[in-house]
Length: 186
Image 1 (tube, helix red, strand yellow):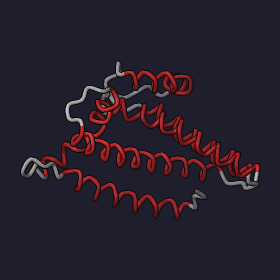
Image 2 (image 1 turned 120 degrees about the vertical axis):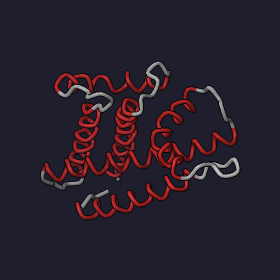
Image 3 (image 1 turned 30 degrees about the horizontal axis):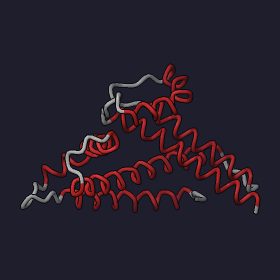
Image 4 (image 1 turned 135 degrees about the vertical axis):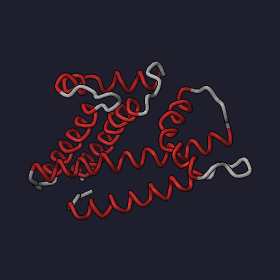
């Protein structure tokens, strides 16, 4: 029972910090306002682990490979710790593959909820200058814009999120199959 509590707590904390690392990657990729207080928090929370890697793997334009590498390695390390606590051992390559698949899965989850947030905000508080709302708009806009070109607003409604959800769902199904094929434990 104590091991289950420890593993559950470790998974929760791991997912939280992994989300911060992925958000840092997405913020740079989507050119989110660096002076936004939420961006500042995420940068300060992830700098201790990403800065040393960034010296070896510098960013290429908007692609922050250091944050992505740290996220994958961090998740692989957490799999190693959690599985070791449970008494299992796996090859390092499997742990890295699981880390990569978990990072991709979390990116899809972040976009799913960000787009839902964007939809709700567009109904309840359009044009609100809150920093969180600005970030949601800035990370979803690069994904939404191509779909808006395919399906323009009809009668004042933007139906492009439906297409985005269809694509996200297809990618999530593929990811689920890849996770099962790779033998991911959770």
